[in-house]
Length: 121
Image (cartoon, rainbow, N blue to C red; front, side, top):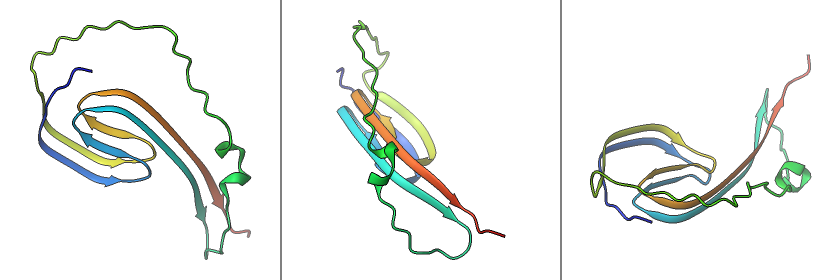
């Protein structure tokens, strides 16, 4: 990996959550994983006892692409450094990365089960 210095003038990130990464600089690898159950419910909240093991989504093995081909790449950088004037991000969430710099390898897995519980009329 070609190492470069990252020079950043201004960054504004409002929120970072749920296995998200905000990184200035180089990283060799990043493995991030999110498991979440999101419940949207009308009326008063009852005590909900939800378990990841009850849902197949969280027990399945990820099907990562089988990358057998080799890509040969030659990069010519006009500057030795990475210059960033300004970044404005509302949010970085659920196994995502906001990266200024080089990343050699990344594996990100986000699994979210959403429920809407509506009151009966």
